[in-house]
Length: 193
Ligand code: FES
Image (cartoon, rainbow, N blue to C red):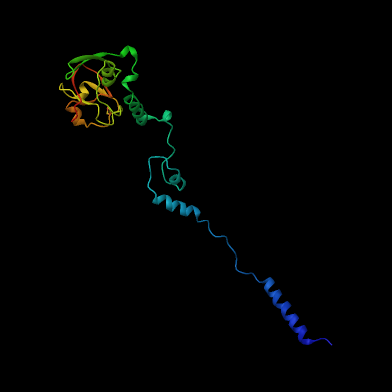
């Protein structure tokens, strides 16, 4: 004989499954993509820069690509060219532009002729004078000298001197290791401010 209890339970289970099968559950939607929103927020909080900064640019900030030196245009390009010209050493001047100047070494009691493309220190050594020096790059004061004839820059071009202030050069101080003559003058060697 059929067990009525078992049949009722089985019918109940089937009924529940049928109801579940035909019932529409709550819908599923993908989360909104928030990554762009985050990038925009972070970009707004990063200051703009005028130099290439890959990590900054990657989140939306920073400037555009910096043009290569050869491509720089307008005022920027002109400034670059000017800086290049200014950094040209007098030692590289063409031979047909070289001039010669008389420099009286007051303490030594001698006058030497120095070309505009050679330093006073080099020429004085060539002439047999034992002048003081250390770095030979305009970065110490070992080779310092003084002209009583006025501002140093009226008599020499300093190539990359990093030691004297404008005022000291106004007073006539110069570094003979990086000083190229542009005029005749008297020089007191071994004199620092
Ligand atoms: S030797 Fe150092 S500045 Fe001239």
